[in-house]
Length: 367
Image (cartoon, rainbow, N blue to C red; front, side, top):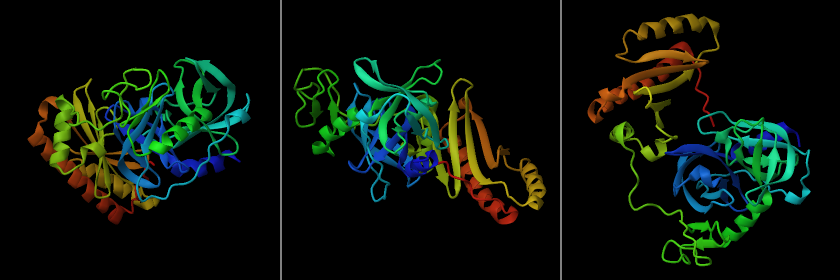
Protein backbone atom coordinates (compact mmCIF):
# COMPACT_ATOMS: atom_id res chain seq x y z
CA UNK A 1 0.00 0.00 0.00
CA UNK A 2 1.37 3.43 -0.97
CA UNK A 3 2.15 5.88 1.84
CA UNK A 4 -0.51 8.28 0.61
CA UNK A 5 -3.14 5.54 0.78
CA UNK A 6 -2.08 4.72 4.33
CA UNK A 7 -2.33 8.37 5.34
CA UNK A 8 -5.79 8.72 3.80
CA UNK A 9 -6.96 5.49 5.46
CA UNK A 10 -5.86 6.66 8.92
CA UNK A 11 -6.83 10.31 8.91
CA UNK A 12 -10.24 9.79 10.52
CA UNK A 13 -8.88 7.17 12.93
CA UNK A 14 -6.32 9.53 14.46
CA UNK A 15 -7.50 11.25 17.64
CA UNK A 16 -6.24 14.45 19.24
CA UNK A 17 -5.97 14.21 23.03
CA UNK A 18 -5.56 17.06 25.51
CA UNK A 19 -5.48 17.41 29.27
CA UNK A 20 -4.83 20.36 31.54
CA UNK A 21 -1.16 19.30 31.65
CA UNK A 22 -0.36 18.42 28.04
CA UNK A 23 -1.34 16.98 24.67
CA UNK A 24 -0.83 13.83 22.65
CA UNK A 25 -2.24 11.47 20.06
CA UNK A 26 -4.44 8.38 20.02
CA UNK A 27 -6.00 6.12 17.42
CA UNK A 28 -9.25 4.17 17.19
CA UNK A 29 -9.43 0.37 16.90
CA UNK A 30 -12.89 -0.68 15.73
CA UNK A 31 -12.43 -4.36 16.64
CA UNK A 32 -12.37 -3.39 20.32
CA UNK A 33 -14.24 -0.06 20.01
CA UNK A 34 -11.56 1.77 22.00
CA UNK A 35 -9.14 4.65 21.53
CA UNK A 36 -5.51 3.68 22.14
CA UNK A 37 -2.87 6.05 23.48
CA UNK A 38 0.07 6.21 25.90
CA UNK A 39 -0.39 6.16 29.65
CA UNK A 40 1.88 9.19 29.95
CA UNK A 41 -0.44 11.15 27.62
CA UNK A 42 -3.44 10.82 29.97
CA UNK A 43 -1.34 11.07 33.14
CA UNK A 44 -3.45 11.06 36.30
CA UNK A 45 -6.60 12.12 34.45
CA UNK A 46 -9.67 9.89 34.39
CA UNK A 47 -11.23 12.10 31.71
CA UNK A 48 -9.58 13.84 28.76
CA UNK A 49 -10.59 15.98 25.80
CA UNK A 50 -10.59 14.32 22.37
CA UNK A 51 -11.19 15.58 18.83
CA UNK A 52 -10.78 14.25 15.30
CA UNK A 53 -11.80 14.65 11.68
CA UNK A 54 -14.94 12.56 12.21
CA UNK A 55 -16.28 14.40 15.27
CA UNK A 56 -16.17 17.65 17.24
CA UNK A 57 -14.22 18.12 20.45
CA UNK A 58 -15.72 16.13 23.31
CA UNK A 59 -14.83 14.52 26.64
CA UNK A 60 -13.69 10.91 26.86
CA UNK A 61 -13.44 8.59 29.86
CA UNK A 62 -10.12 6.85 30.53
CA UNK A 63 -10.98 3.20 31.24
CA UNK A 64 -7.63 1.41 31.30
CA UNK A 65 -4.11 2.42 32.27
CA UNK A 66 -0.86 0.45 32.10
CA UNK A 67 2.22 2.20 33.42
CA UNK A 68 4.65 -0.61 32.58
CA UNK A 69 3.71 -0.78 28.88
CA UNK A 70 2.77 2.91 28.69
CA UNK A 71 -0.74 2.18 27.38
CA UNK A 72 -4.15 3.70 28.04
CA UNK A 73 -7.59 2.93 26.57
CA UNK A 74 -10.25 5.60 26.19
CA UNK A 75 -13.96 5.52 25.51
CA UNK A 76 -14.82 6.12 21.85
CA UNK A 77 -17.13 8.99 20.80
CA UNK A 78 -20.83 8.14 20.73
CA UNK A 79 -22.89 8.10 17.54
CA UNK A 80 -19.90 8.50 15.22
CA UNK A 81 -19.01 6.17 12.36
CA UNK A 82 -15.29 5.56 12.73
CA UNK A 83 -13.01 3.87 10.16
CA UNK A 84 -11.63 0.38 10.61
CA UNK A 85 -7.88 -0.15 10.90
CA UNK A 86 -6.33 -3.55 11.50
CA UNK A 87 -3.73 -4.75 13.95
CA UNK A 88 -0.69 -6.38 12.35
CA UNK A 89 1.57 -9.18 13.58
CA UNK A 90 4.84 -8.63 15.41
CA UNK A 91 6.41 -11.86 14.18
CA UNK A 92 6.17 -10.71 10.56
CA UNK A 93 8.32 -7.60 11.11
CA UNK A 94 12.00 -7.45 10.24
CA UNK A 95 14.79 -4.89 10.29
CA UNK A 96 14.67 -2.59 7.28
CA UNK A 97 10.89 -2.72 6.78
CA UNK A 98 9.28 0.52 5.64
CA UNK A 99 6.97 2.13 8.20
CA UNK A 100 4.86 5.25 8.63
CA UNK A 101 4.56 6.98 12.01
CA UNK A 102 1.26 8.86 12.23
CA UNK A 103 0.25 11.44 14.78
CA UNK A 104 -1.76 14.54 15.40
CA UNK A 105 -0.49 16.86 18.13
CA UNK A 106 -3.46 18.79 19.53
CA UNK A 107 -4.15 21.95 17.54
CA UNK A 108 -1.52 21.19 14.90
CA UNK A 109 -1.80 19.83 11.40
CA UNK A 110 -2.10 16.12 10.84
CA UNK A 111 1.40 14.65 10.47
CA UNK A 112 2.82 11.45 9.05
CA UNK A 113 6.50 10.61 8.63
CA UNK A 114 8.10 7.76 6.71
CA UNK A 115 11.05 5.68 7.82
CA UNK A 116 12.35 2.18 8.34
CA UNK A 117 12.65 -0.21 11.26
CA UNK A 118 16.21 0.10 12.55
CA UNK A 119 15.79 -2.80 14.98
CA UNK A 120 12.69 -4.90 15.59
CA UNK A 121 13.48 -5.93 19.16
CA UNK A 122 15.43 -3.26 20.96
CA UNK A 123 15.30 -4.15 24.68
CA UNK A 124 14.63 -1.34 27.14
CA UNK A 125 13.64 -1.85 30.79
CA UNK A 126 12.73 -5.48 30.20
CA UNK A 127 10.43 -4.84 27.22
CA UNK A 128 10.96 -5.11 23.48
CA UNK A 129 10.54 -1.91 21.47
CA UNK A 130 10.61 -1.26 17.74
CA UNK A 131 13.39 1.22 17.00
CA UNK A 132 12.60 3.40 13.99
CA UNK A 133 14.29 6.25 12.17
CA UNK A 134 11.05 8.06 11.28
CA UNK A 135 10.94 11.54 12.80
CA UNK A 136 8.49 11.61 15.73
CA UNK A 137 7.40 14.83 17.37
CA UNK A 138 6.97 14.55 21.17
CA UNK A 139 3.31 15.54 20.72
CA UNK A 140 2.78 12.45 18.56
CA UNK A 141 3.08 10.07 21.52
CA UNK A 142 0.31 7.48 21.38
CA UNK A 143 -0.07 7.48 17.60
CA UNK A 144 0.14 4.31 15.48
CA UNK A 145 3.18 2.90 13.72
CA UNK A 146 1.93 1.42 10.44
CA UNK A 147 3.47 -1.11 8.03
CA UNK A 148 3.25 -1.25 4.21
CA UNK A 149 0.01 -3.25 4.45
CA UNK A 150 -1.67 -0.45 6.36
CA UNK A 151 -1.68 -2.43 9.62
CA UNK A 152 -0.85 -1.09 13.08
CA UNK A 153 2.39 -2.73 14.21
CA UNK A 154 3.17 -0.52 17.19
CA UNK A 155 2.28 2.45 19.38
CA UNK A 156 4.69 5.40 19.12
CA UNK A 157 5.91 5.80 22.68
CA UNK A 158 9.06 7.88 23.08
CA UNK A 159 12.11 9.41 21.47
CA UNK A 160 15.66 9.93 22.68
CA UNK A 161 16.21 13.66 22.92
CA UNK A 162 19.31 14.79 21.10
CA UNK A 163 19.34 11.60 19.05
CA UNK A 164 19.17 11.65 15.27
CA UNK A 165 15.64 10.37 14.60
CA UNK A 166 15.75 7.77 17.36
CA UNK A 167 12.12 6.81 17.92
CA UNK A 168 10.63 3.83 19.71
CA UNK A 169 7.24 2.14 19.43
CA UNK A 170 5.67 -0.50 21.67
CA UNK A 171 5.14 -3.63 19.49
CA UNK A 172 1.58 -4.61 18.57
CA UNK A 173 1.78 -7.94 20.41
CA UNK A 174 1.86 -6.11 23.76
CA UNK A 175 -1.09 -3.99 22.65
CA UNK A 176 -3.13 -6.96 21.47
CA UNK A 177 -2.48 -8.82 24.74
CA UNK A 178 -3.68 -5.81 26.76
CA UNK A 179 -6.80 -5.34 24.61
CA UNK A 180 -7.80 -9.00 24.93
CA UNK A 181 -7.17 -8.91 28.68
CA UNK A 182 -9.30 -5.81 29.17
CA UNK A 183 -12.15 -6.73 26.78
CA UNK A 184 -14.23 -8.74 29.33
CA UNK A 185 -14.09 -5.73 31.69
CA UNK A 186 -14.88 -3.06 29.12
CA UNK A 187 -16.58 -0.06 30.69
CA UNK A 188 -14.91 -0.64 34.06
CA UNK A 189 -12.07 1.47 35.42
CA UNK A 190 -9.04 -0.84 35.34
CA UNK A 191 -5.29 -0.68 35.66
CA UNK A 192 -2.60 -3.25 35.01
CA UNK A 193 -0.25 -3.80 37.91
CA UNK A 194 3.24 -2.69 36.89
CA UNK A 195 4.80 -5.30 39.18
CA UNK A 196 2.96 -8.53 38.28
CA UNK A 197 0.87 -7.63 35.18
CA UNK A 198 -2.38 -8.53 36.97
CA UNK A 199 -5.48 -6.65 35.79
CA UNK A 200 -6.85 -4.70 38.75
CA UNK A 201 -10.49 -3.61 38.51
CA UNK A 202 -13.06 -1.92 40.73
CA UNK A 203 -14.34 -5.35 41.79
CA UNK A 204 -11.06 -6.95 42.85
CA UNK A 205 -8.87 -4.11 44.11
CA UNK A 206 -7.70 -4.73 47.68
CA UNK A 207 -8.51 -1.99 50.21
CA UNK A 208 -9.14 0.39 47.29
CA UNK A 209 -5.44 0.78 46.51
CA UNK A 210 -3.56 -2.54 46.38
CA UNK A 211 -3.12 -5.19 43.70
CA UNK A 212 -4.90 -8.36 44.92
CA UNK A 213 -2.20 -10.52 43.34
CA UNK A 214 1.05 -9.04 44.67
CA UNK A 215 0.06 -6.24 47.04
CA UNK A 216 1.66 -3.43 45.03
CA UNK A 217 -0.04 -0.07 45.49
CA UNK A 218 -1.93 0.85 42.31
CA UNK A 219 -4.37 3.55 41.22
CA UNK A 220 -7.50 3.08 39.13
CA UNK A 221 -8.48 5.81 36.64
CA UNK A 222 -11.46 6.94 38.73
CA UNK A 223 -13.22 10.28 38.48
CA UNK A 224 -12.31 12.52 41.45
CA UNK A 225 -15.06 13.52 43.87
CA UNK A 226 -14.10 17.13 43.24
CA UNK A 227 -12.45 18.42 40.09
CA UNK A 228 -8.95 19.79 40.59
CA UNK A 229 -9.04 23.49 39.79
CA UNK A 230 -6.16 25.62 38.50
CA UNK A 231 -4.71 28.40 40.62
CA UNK A 232 -3.68 32.00 40.08
CA UNK A 233 -4.22 33.60 36.69
CA UNK A 234 -5.25 30.29 35.10
CA UNK A 235 -8.08 30.03 37.63
CA UNK A 236 -9.23 33.57 36.79
CA UNK A 237 -9.25 32.76 33.08
CA UNK A 238 -11.36 29.65 33.64
CA UNK A 239 -13.78 31.59 35.86
CA UNK A 240 -14.13 34.15 33.05
CA UNK A 241 -14.82 31.43 30.49
CA UNK A 242 -17.48 29.93 32.77
CA UNK A 243 -19.09 33.35 33.16
CA UNK A 244 -19.21 33.60 29.37
CA UNK A 245 -21.00 30.25 29.12
CA UNK A 246 -18.04 28.18 27.93
CA UNK A 247 -17.27 24.61 29.02
CA UNK A 248 -13.78 24.94 30.49
CA UNK A 249 -13.18 21.19 30.52
CA UNK A 250 -13.68 21.12 26.76
CA UNK A 251 -11.76 24.36 26.32
CA UNK A 252 -8.50 23.08 27.85
CA UNK A 253 -5.78 22.37 25.32
CA UNK A 254 -2.74 21.91 27.51
CA UNK A 255 -0.87 23.95 30.10
CA UNK A 256 -2.27 27.50 30.19
CA UNK A 257 -3.96 27.12 26.80
CA UNK A 258 -7.70 27.20 26.08
CA UNK A 259 -9.70 27.17 22.86
CA UNK A 260 -13.36 28.08 22.38
CA UNK A 261 -15.71 28.85 19.50
CA UNK A 262 -17.94 31.86 19.12
CA UNK A 263 -20.20 31.53 16.10
CA UNK A 264 -17.90 30.74 13.19
CA UNK A 265 -14.75 32.12 14.88
CA UNK A 266 -12.24 30.09 16.88
CA UNK A 267 -10.57 31.86 19.80
CA UNK A 268 -7.34 30.60 21.35
CA UNK A 269 -6.43 31.96 24.80
CA UNK A 270 -2.85 31.61 26.01
CA UNK A 271 -1.34 32.66 29.32
CA UNK A 272 2.39 33.39 29.09
CA UNK A 273 3.41 33.12 32.72
CA UNK A 274 7.05 34.01 32.01
CA UNK A 275 6.17 37.36 30.45
CA UNK A 276 3.00 37.97 32.51
CA UNK A 277 0.48 38.46 29.70
CA UNK A 278 -2.68 36.80 28.42
CA UNK A 279 -3.31 36.69 24.68
CA UNK A 280 -6.67 36.07 23.05
CA UNK A 281 -6.30 35.26 19.35
CA UNK A 282 -9.50 34.90 17.36
CA UNK A 283 -8.91 33.02 14.11
CA UNK A 284 -11.39 34.31 11.58
CA UNK A 285 -11.68 33.53 7.88
CA UNK A 286 -8.90 33.23 5.31
CA UNK A 287 -7.69 35.72 2.72
CA UNK A 288 -9.73 35.89 -0.50
CA UNK A 289 -8.36 34.34 -3.68
CA UNK A 290 -9.55 37.21 -5.88
CA UNK A 291 -6.67 39.68 -6.32
CA UNK A 292 -9.06 42.63 -6.65
CA UNK A 293 -10.25 42.05 -3.07
CA UNK A 294 -6.80 42.10 -1.41
CA UNK A 295 -6.10 45.85 -1.44
CA UNK A 296 -9.52 46.97 -0.15
CA UNK A 297 -9.35 44.22 2.50
CA UNK A 298 -5.97 45.45 3.78
CA UNK A 299 -7.25 49.03 3.83
CA UNK A 300 -10.28 47.98 5.83
CA UNK A 301 -8.22 46.00 8.38
CA UNK A 302 -5.77 48.89 8.89
CA UNK A 303 -8.60 51.36 9.35
CA UNK A 304 -10.36 49.07 11.84
CA UNK A 305 -7.19 48.80 13.95
CA UNK A 306 -7.80 52.43 14.95
CA UNK A 307 -11.38 51.73 16.04
CA UNK A 308 -11.39 48.35 17.75
CA UNK A 309 -10.80 49.36 21.42
CA UNK A 310 -7.66 47.34 22.14
CA UNK A 311 -8.24 44.73 19.44
CA UNK A 312 -5.71 44.34 16.65
CA UNK A 313 -6.02 42.68 13.25
CA UNK A 314 -3.12 40.72 11.78
CA UNK A 315 -2.59 38.22 8.98
CA UNK A 316 -0.79 34.97 9.77
CA UNK A 317 -0.11 33.23 6.48
CA UNK A 318 -3.60 33.10 4.95
CA UNK A 319 -5.48 33.50 8.24
CA UNK A 320 -7.00 36.76 9.45
CA UNK A 321 -6.58 37.01 13.22
CA UNK A 322 -8.20 39.42 15.69
CA UNK A 323 -6.17 39.66 18.91
CA UNK A 324 -6.28 41.19 22.36
CA UNK A 325 -3.44 41.21 24.92
CA UNK A 326 -3.83 42.01 28.62
CA UNK A 327 -1.30 41.76 31.46
CA UNK A 328 -2.10 39.30 34.23
CA UNK A 329 -1.89 41.96 36.96
CA UNK A 330 -4.55 43.98 35.16
CA UNK A 331 -7.13 41.21 34.86
CA UNK A 332 -9.83 40.13 37.27
CA UNK A 333 -13.02 38.17 36.87
CA UNK A 334 -15.18 41.22 36.14
CA UNK A 335 -13.04 43.20 33.71
CA UNK A 336 -11.71 40.02 32.13
CA UNK A 337 -15.26 38.95 31.25
CA UNK A 338 -15.83 42.34 29.61
CA UNK A 339 -12.58 42.09 27.63
CA UNK A 340 -13.19 38.60 26.32
CA UNK A 341 -16.92 39.10 25.76
CA UNK A 342 -15.99 42.03 23.50
CA UNK A 343 -13.36 39.94 21.67
CA UNK A 344 -15.75 37.00 21.19
CA UNK A 345 -18.59 39.21 19.91
CA UNK A 346 -16.43 41.21 17.51
CA UNK A 347 -14.70 38.06 16.24
CA UNK A 348 -18.01 36.54 15.21
CA UNK A 349 -19.20 39.81 13.67
CA UNK A 350 -16.00 40.43 11.72
CA UNK A 351 -15.86 36.86 10.48
CA UNK A 352 -19.28 37.25 8.85
CA UNK A 353 -18.52 40.75 7.54
CA UNK A 354 -15.23 39.76 5.90
CA UNK A 355 -16.82 36.81 4.14
CA UNK A 356 -19.78 38.83 2.89
CA UNK A 357 -18.03 42.05 1.85
CA UNK A 358 -14.53 40.94 0.86
CA UNK A 359 -15.18 37.37 -0.29
CA UNK A 360 -12.88 35.90 2.37
CA UNK A 361 -12.85 32.11 2.61
CA UNK A 362 -13.98 29.83 5.42
CA UNK A 363 -11.20 28.98 7.84
CA UNK A 364 -9.63 25.57 7.37
CA UNK A 365 -10.12 23.64 10.59
CA UNK A 366 -7.00 21.91 11.89
CA UNK A 367 -8.19 18.34 12.37
